[in-house]
Amino acid sequence: MFISPVLLWFLAGIACFLVEMALPGFILFFFGIGAWCVALALAVMDIPLATQLVVFLVCSLASLAALRSKLRTVFLGGVFEQNDSVIVDAASATGTVTEAILPPATGRVKYGGSFWNAVADEKIDAGTVVDIVGKNDLIVKVQPLTSLKENDNE
Image (tube, rainbow, N blue to C red):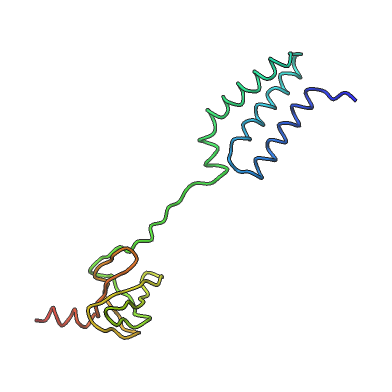
């Protein structure tokens, strides 16, 4: 049984596309393009195997160099980096204590829709509204709003 070289290269291209879907490194896609270029060239003219391999390599590498960076963002999606750090704005950064803070141990504060480990210089009960006065990695430093107002009056 004789299978046309055009069909073989075409099926090799499809195989590269299918394997690419299973192993998403986004390289085999371009070998599939190269295989289809050889199939197209063979459909137009009869070329020897050595020339077919050269056409395959040249087309694969050229499409890889020209299209990979553009198509990668299309097929793999863009990268969205979200900053989880707390931005402390002294005028408006407040939260609510969800677990009591008993120094030197940490408690928990709900701030900005998330729960954060928190430290304070004094004992703060759960349910108290606090001001975020600083942060160190994933731990925020807080103090009760009432103590801030008392300090401002003095």
